[in-house]
View 1: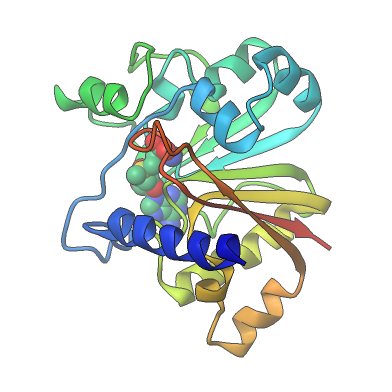
View 2: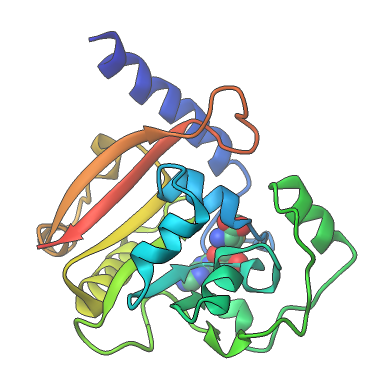
Length: 233
Ligand SMILES: C[S@@+](CC[C@H](N)C(=O)[O-])C[C@H]1O[C@@H](n2cnc3c(N)ncnc32)[C@H](O)[C@@H]1O
């Protein structure tokens, strides 16, 4: 009872904080901030803190896409680079990758602030899997992707129902049946309810689960918020 009342409240407070200053790509009056994360972060948020070896073994032979990946492909200790080293098909998707990121002095600092310990290398290996496109226009065949991850992009920055609808439609197209989308941080499901009937119809193609994640002690790095998993029916 306490859990069901308090967690949505904490989540909505954290979520309002996350939303301060964010907006919709191309529509926001503010430049969208791009950051990059470590594999350690992804393991904790998306893979229940399993070891690097365990995660990579489970993903061998799978196709994974990281939506709104930001600087992550350039970060040496990222999941993108760990998968490249093990020959796992892990793609970074971000419109800013189209012409390569323009690295500024602040980029290393931004990666450090969000917890990445690696180096940023503008000529990192494997960048052919860093694809400059929007999330609603993915370069994958129908029913070909096993897992979509998205950290601090969907719902945090991309929060317009019409854009979200197009993106979920695209996720449904590219995912294999039983394939998953995992998004963090997300608002409580009650506040994710689409107003539009066509959006609701698209979402009915997914089974949806939510889990409260993050870390109350390390709350700056891992803010307490919901991780939502959408499984293609
Ligand atoms: C705050 S960054 C997050 C980067 C990275 N995922 C991380 O956790 O550090 C948000 C990223 O989402 C990207 N983005 C915004 N709108 C997008 C869209 N419609 N499709 C794909 N990526 C988008 C931005 O270019 C930006 O790099």
